[in-house]
View 1 (cartoon, helix red, strand yellow):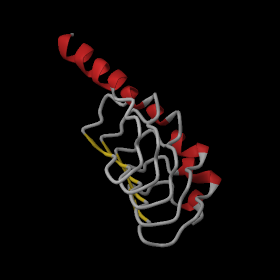
View 2 (cartoon, helix red, strand yellow):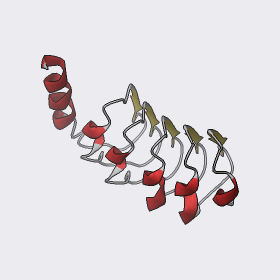
View 3 (cartoon, one colour):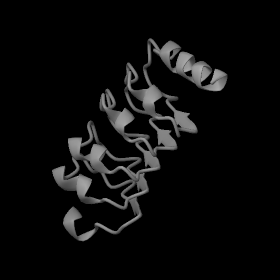
View 4 (cartoon, helix red, strand yellow):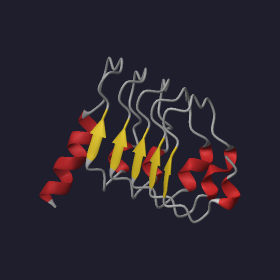
Length: 129
């Protein structure tokens, strides 16, 4: 996929394609709101994905992710994050930064420790304010 010619795309479905790696220029998809990468063989996302500030829906389920980018919290518009059925063992500490997140699925992973206490505390603090 050559991203430089897709700058105005709002929704991109690359599900079920056996993709193992995304191009580093993925951040050029400046208008992207919905990205479906489910049922591939991805293990990581390119750093440039953090430049897609308009991203609202990110489907990464049924891949081979062992971890999620530690700065995923920079995707401030994100509302829907599906990480189910990967091989995650921990969630990123920046998850509470996703203030617009309404849907999070981490089912079917090997999460030994949810690390959810900081997430719950952040939510309680917002509710009190």
